[in-house]
Image: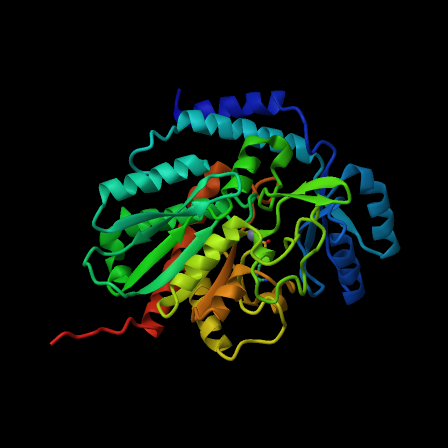
Length: 434
Ligand code: 0X9
Ligand code: ZN
């Protein structure tokens, strides 16, 4: 039987046996707030994170909001929507079942495309943190003159966090650097997948991309939050986990993790973050309370003077966001940020027709302080950008494995174009030795 045939048969079996668990009874709703009052009401709901998980909610009305609702709250939720004259549609009426099906399918994909720890990675499935580390270690073995790995620290649970630095192997030190990271938020699986594809292009497809590496190096950290990432990949009950995994006590109860993208000590916990350890946007007890954010901070600081672009890849919602995220004010150089973002926008639109929204985080999405992009920009990176890749699948965070390939390729088109623009705008100064 063909490979596709095997997948189709197995898919039918999975759909038949999948049982709901963990997110049993949870539903995902889509709502269109038409007034600022309606929007503000949804924003208030979003603070009740034990009941509501907003995957999409913007600062301004007239954009579709998406929220996953705890079944114990559903009745209150529907009543409150009615009170506020908000209509809704249900986009997923059994999240538990969808998660179960997704896990079964991933298991199948793993057995159909195993990774031996050597050679190329396919775009046919999502990889574990261990596999990702194996892959970049193997790249260092295979391309020692162009690739160097560094273990930059350990996650809270003790996983090795590694950067891969990619050059053209000419031995020239002091080139400007583009720093890219992925996997900040555990559930955003497409992010490490996209970052891995970038690594593959720069290393294994070097000839085609040599121009990018002539005067520039790339430093890449594929999974910032490996504890959270592994948690979402190994437990159906944790598919929507977002944060790190360090425990915190709150009113006699233990809650886990801080939102790594609220934990940077720059306007820390001022806006759009929570002081409640059980909330999804918990800023941490203080800035840089998490080993994972300390690692990113130190990398950013180590690139002072050479860091041209900091790009952090998240999902979902199709946004190219630039500073600031802590205030609605725009930075003095916002036109440069916009120009770079637009080069990404155009490249993606031309490649596939996919559209992104471009603008400052606070103005086009929502205010949220303590994020890595603002920190990097303040630390001197000329360009800092958060790229929110498109959603997909029944959960939003689960583009089916069959669409990973298309998504990471279009993302690469955008990243490549932004890198070209940055390299043109901020050339590495050539030191001539006479
Ligand atoms: O809220 C976030 O951390 C990011 N969105 S996500 O859905 N992936 O969680 C957006 C961060 C934008 N940047 C700043 N607010 N500085
Ligand atoms: Zn994110």
